Length: 267
Length: 246
Image (cartoon, rainbow over the protein chains, first blue to last red):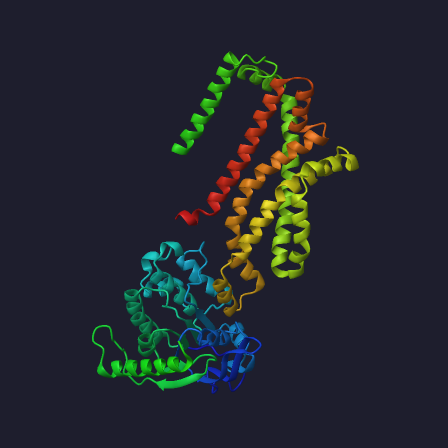
């Protein structure tokens, strides 16, 4: 896929795709959700944010999406502000709860992204949904689909306009364990093919290690970056059948960090 | 189908009870005319009845249209102008809680028997369910979907069209089932108070002239109108929300 960079200011090509500099966020005076966040995501990189509830990882993602403003510091996406990046139609977002219009079919919901963004160089919704294993369900309404299917439609709707930036907020978090495992593998394949710069928020360490190039662990009260761990495991990381010792070791190490962070901030 | 059978059974039962009452209750035909007598009145006075019906329907439909314009403007306006909701809520609540019969009396002595006071009464009795449901439906809009639209840089119009309005529509349709029928009742009551025309006027005349047959005839017509209004709203509503039953 040829990334569309028209309309981006000069020099944006060399900048990181997502850059947070000295970012803090507080909703009420005195209680910081996030503090002193420096995070930079290179083009095409997939960074997973993990951390206990209340660490501000969703808030961080919402700032990258332009849905929240930082209290201090700056957030840049593709060298411009997040809302400008949205205006360039270069951002796709999928949340934990599928953002689908209930009165529109799966196909219409994916198509909606193209209508709203006005992108004519997007993917074909029919083909995309077929690729996502939903060829039989193009004309089903969201309530007729299972949770896993709804989430695939949701991710299709976030990818169909071929954004350079993909923001995923626990996209598999509401699914049962078995669906979640098979969807993780499926998502790894999708992201490997489409290859946008991706920021993924997740509770699941396995999911983070399967998908990510880097795993960033947040501490909490307030949220800070505690660890930033590159994942060098070979792909595809088929783990549900026979996880490699290296994979298991990486998961164990990240779990250890998470527990240490949790102990430091109290349960 | 069993739904239809239940309605049919109800109609037959009413006819049977009516006939039995005429035969055995001992009430004079003046207060309890036979179905045949009522049918006769409906036919003999068909032009007066039709005129009355059209007059009532005109008042009800015009008032209902006005009520919809006001409710839609207030509800949609409040989404974008915070002060509008804050400003209008006390008015809406107070108006809703003044018994409209009291207002009707006031309207007669100030405005007489023109169309305007009748329209005001119809609007007052039916705009509240429309407004309340529209407000509720707009507020029930999916926040996640709105966030998705914002990250796609959707305009206000697109957010309204794709998220807010589809969310409000089922609530709005449900309100029609109540309010459309109420508008017909409102029109009849308004005529009852302050008009020389319409089904309401026929009812008042029937009372003062001891014409039970005319009262029954007007009652039948207004019930059919009211049921028709309900049925149309329900059919249109079910059509527009047919995806829910897919």
